[in-house]
Length: 507
View 1 (spheres, helix red, strand yellow):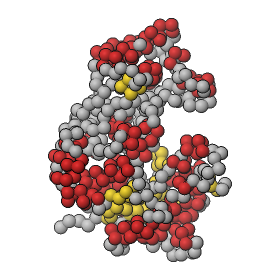
View 2: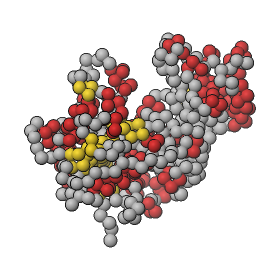
View 3: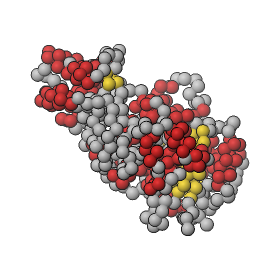
View 4: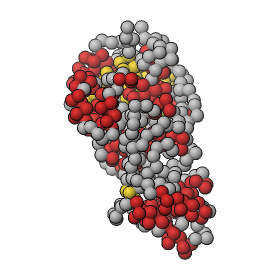
């Protein structure tokens, strides 16, 4: 007899990181996966295509995923052929993943869709979070002084989430957002205070009238109910404290309907693997060279041109990396690396989470191009980090490597963008993987000097804890966007344990 699962309604789903964690979680007590996604809603075209493909994958039992799926990942089959050969599974995927822009115009449509999918089910969870660009610290600094900023719709997209709570009264919900939300203000009032009040009393917030629908709010990091007197920083979850190989700090709010007499537990702490633990088994590849001829020989020559730059200042090379540079250049000359590789082997860390024995090749592991000057900076950064166990600041750069931009003196003085180039230190967790990785690789330099490049989509996905059989759709820029904006699935699976315990208490 098939065990009954708790439905999930996943809105503002992105590429599906939060839903992936929930649907992958296996309950130790029940010996099966207790969650099943009924609806995933996302408005971005490429993220939706990624969601659709993942729902297609999930429509099969883990042992019965067809070989054609892996052929598609390897580029041997078109997506159209894959879906056509398994049309029933494709229809099932389309019946769960929806491309909808949430808002006033789509509200009634979404309301009917969710009601139909739930079919009066009483035990279910609402998950997701509104787009967060307007809440981010970088976003607010760029928009500061703009008369349109405080009226930006993205401040209020959480209210669409609020209306869904009001419409469907979930026993439990979880809302995720960036930590910059804690310091954002509208009309001089902290946004977080308004959100805490609205989520506690959604009926009042939506209708303007007092009502019986109430929620108790909880943190995943601190025990006890959260109210207006509680420090909102309690909502912050530090992913690296829970086995995720990345210093990713995000806000999570759990809401439990007031008629449910249960206080959820907090996340259990665990040590994370390092960057090297997580990505070192992926194939070694070199970067492309942009704006000039690109092949293995030209690339080696371009990288080795660093020597001519250093002749005038050879003895005083900042960071004491002269010996490491000589060794790296010798290895680079022997390397003859390609710019992509599909070779796949068992991961060294979190094997049970990442690994798929049916996967014969890895997808999304192609490098991007860098100018020759940036190749030299990347090589310096990786060597500096290898010797000093820390990424260099602009002030640490030899003068020959300083970027030629107008604010470079301020950067050297530490006044702005002092860490414009940041290497991911091998023996530490990664810095936060953000959507900015789609623009350039300067903040996401690989620790290996021989590869002399920024991270690939697959490496970023590993650091975000996406399984290796998780494929991202769209051009590379769109793939980076999806990975950078996602919730780490490995963290989401741990949150699922807590949400399951709430739903188990629902009568």
